[in-house]
Image 1 (cartoon, rainbow, N blue to C red):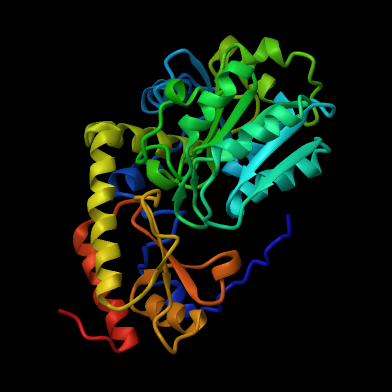
Image 2: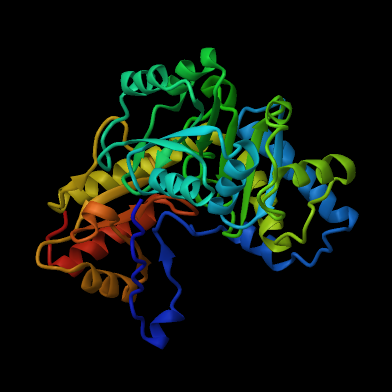
Length: 380
């Protein structure tokens, strides 16, 4: 996969200190409750107090992923680190991986496999195109060397939710390992480890869980450890067997973790449960996303990758007529909102706006009014 260049937008020093409302798909805006927990996170990672935090994180992640009998391993680093740990721990260099991708983050998995020297087949769709189950089945029928399949649940680059349950039903009778990226879905989109028949799920403390960046986790079916005992470690820090052994033996992590990020994660998970769990957050995201989409359409902006499988947490919209992204970004940022540039094929004319994090309907309405003001468009 080609590496897309990261383009930073220059910001004046005074603007950099502004109190921005993050409407980007991570890092997301955190609540005051999570911020307070983050600010009070002076814990030693070998102390009982932190071990209790870690235990509560494991318990709550099992609940929201509907994974009661699965191992949950928490690590410092973004979800990219957790994904690389999964590939390095659960696939040997002579086992073939099938990567199914229809956007940037599926392609990132393919790039990781290449870096690790894992033989790979790549079912690569145009960005935003639907995954065709019969094509996956045909590739598996044609190549018995494939021992695992990896795909993204919510492909954030295009705002599409992929059919992880349907793919799981194809893989289960074949006894293939199934790696699912739930980084931008867990906590808001419907996901159930058992129904998906996933072997491993990879997630982030940020995004729909509303923690802070810097912590990630792996949820693994317990049988996978025996099934992959032949795989030799490729890394010390990313060797998930170390994480499992230390968690089981001592209730800790093998290396110094990002303690503040994990304390914030525990509080964010607690907050999620207090708000009514995943069903309540799903309903909230749907309401926010409907308001956002209808408002952008009302302003005459075209939505991209829009359809029945669209995410409830992210919208890809075309820029207002006559505006470059840099100009739109700067003006929007100056007025208190931050969005991201579109990726890949829509990087030249689209922006990504998320309704993830501590966002309410009033925030969405203010954002829409601000877009209208910048673009010189009439509002109702």
